Amino acid sequence: MHALIHKAANSLRLQLQEREGNLRLDLQAPEVFLKGDRQHLSNVIFNLLDNANKYSPEKPQLAVRTYREGDDWVVEVSDQGIGISKQNQAQIFQRFFRVSTGNLHEVKGFGLGLSYVKEVIVAHGGSIEVESSPGKGSIFTVRLPLQNRKM
Ligand SMILES: Nc1ncnc2c1ncn2[C@@H]1O[C@H](COP(=O)(O)OP(=O)(O)O)[C@@H](O)[C@H]1O
Ligand SMILES: [Mg+2]
Image (cartoon, rainbow, N blue to C red):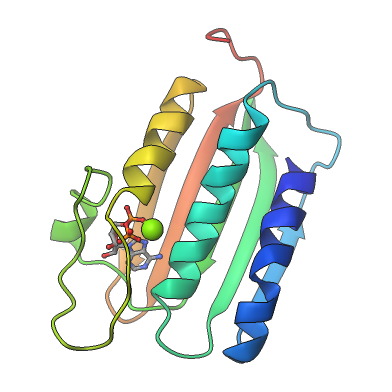
C-alpha cells in the first residue's frame, strides 16, 4: 500500500510544484500488507489526492497519513482547500454529484471519482468517511480490514 501511495504522490508532484503546493507523507506501520486489487486501490489513492489538489484553489497543502488501528489499516488524505458543507458531504459519494461552485474557479470533473472510490473500498470490506468544513479543508478517511473475509 505504501508503494502505491508513493507512486500516486510522485505522479502528482510536478503539478503540486507548479502550484507551489506541498504533499506530506506520514506512513506508519510499513509492515502491513493487504489483500486486494492493486489497480483499483491505486486508483482510489490517486482519486483522493487528485481531488485534494483540484479543490485547493491556492498552494495545495496535502497530506497522506497511514496507520494501523486494531484490525484495520487506515489511510487519511487531507487538504486545506475549499472544504465541503455538511449538506453536500451527504451526497458526494453519489454518482455524478458535484458541488456547484458557481463562478469561483473552473475545476473539471465528472462527479464519478468518489462513487468509484467508495465502491472499491466497500468491495474490499472497508469504509470511507469525510470530515470537512467549508473554507478550512477536508479529510477523507479510508479503513480497510487487514483480515478480509470477502476476498
Ligand atoms: N477534497 C475535496 N475538497 C472539496 N470538495 C471535494 C473534495 N473532493 C471531492 N469534492 C467535491 O465532491 C464532488 C465529487 O467528487 P468526485 O466524485 O471526485 O467528482 P469530480 O472530482 O469529478 O467532480 C466534487 O465535484 C467536489 O464538489
Ligand atoms: Mg474527483
